Amino acid sequence: MPNESTQARVERVLFSEETIRARVAEIVREIEASLDDGDLVIVALLKGSVVFLSDLIRGFERQVAFDFVGVSSYGDGTEPGPELTLTKELSIDIAGRDVLLVDDILDTGRTMHRVIGYLRSFGPASLRVCVLLDKRARRQAPIEPDYRGFEIGDEFVVGYGMDFADRYRNLPFIGVLAPVQDAL
Ligand code: PRP
Image 1 (cartoon, rainbow, N blue to C red):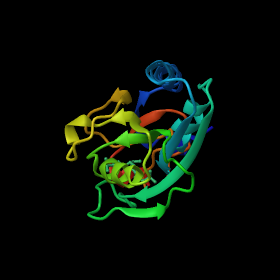
Image 2 (cartoon, rainbow, N blue to C red; image 1 turned 180 degrees about the vertical axis):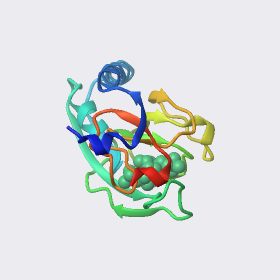
Image 3 (cartoon, helix red, strand yellow; image 1 turned 60 degrees about the horizontal axis):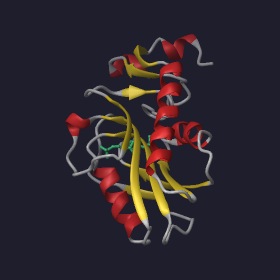
Image 4 (spheres, rainbow, N blue to C red; image 1 turned 45 degrees about the vertical axis):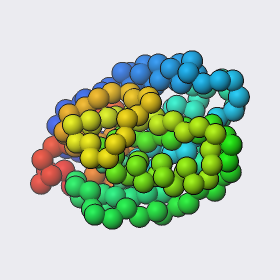
């Protein structure tokens, strides 16, 4: 469990552990219902998606393979930098396979837009997008997720894999970060 001093820097809980668990189970059902039978390859973006991914994959009854692509756009700040950096390449063969691209949060959409282009170059049979959180109001790139957990406003959220300066990822809930001067 996170200690008290970690929790004290989160202003409020946006989604509790129970709320997230229930919604993740619903997302799995939505995905299962909309896919043909067969295997599925999940490609998740490092690092924020790992907690969501681990809960998501355990809900599937079909065979699910997964891999990671490493992309970093925020560094240690709260605003995206101009450049996206690929820090880990795809290492699984997705040619001719059904691919589900998974991420924790869709914000401007610039990361996802670029990763979709990258994945399409490997020739998947299909490519769908699943995000836990959708900050729709901030969208700059033309990305509409096929599956989304929750739509949220323009707030900086942490927990359940999401960080500020690589902290808070281990919180089991999703919370809104207190003002930056109090958060470190
Ligand atoms: C976050 C998040 C998404 C991306 C979304 O990653 O996990 O991948 O930003 O932003 P966008 O829609 O504006 O492009 P981050 O760069 O913080 O890396 P991390 O997952 O390692 O925390």
